Image 1 (tube, rainbow, N blue to C red):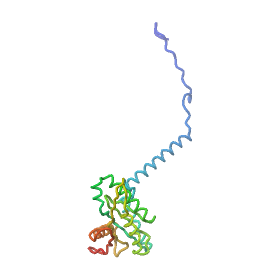
Image 2 (cartoon, one colour):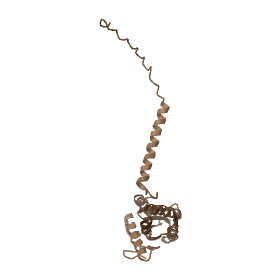
Image 3 (cartoon, helix red, strand yellow):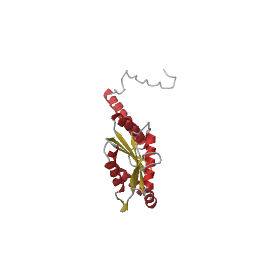
Image 4 (spheres, helix red, strand yellow):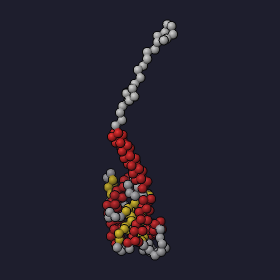
Length: 220
């Protein structure tokens, strides 16, 4: 009953249990969960690629190079094989970058990186260390000398002329090489430093060539 002069409120019907709710499709729920998992996996892969690869060239970066180098050093020692590590610096790149701008310089780096990758075997690794410096791992070598034709391929790939927007550009490569195994224990970073020292010897010897690390202060 309402108060005198007021209209009593109209009662609302109460829904029966389950009435007015939409049934959940368990198959659709499973599909949505699987889609979410797939997206998460793709995101993790993308993040991993960014962490391990050079953003400009798509080549492995220094972090991934170090990881592969450590793995290959263990493997070749176990299999009684040889490994060669090449440290590569592009001769004349800075002048091109300063004269024609960073965009042209970046496109030149991308093309040189593509050519180096194409010149090597599937088992080899070429990485960008930063700037105009690269490194390559040659593995599965029966003898240290087996790396020589591979290094010649690298020198040829680097020195081939490149045309960008009508500009004829050309650089060369100074390459330092260190071999593994050696006498005594050696870490991956030590091997990379040896190749770096040999690369500077190649530059001092006239550039566009390779020098091999054979001892402290003694490259040839």
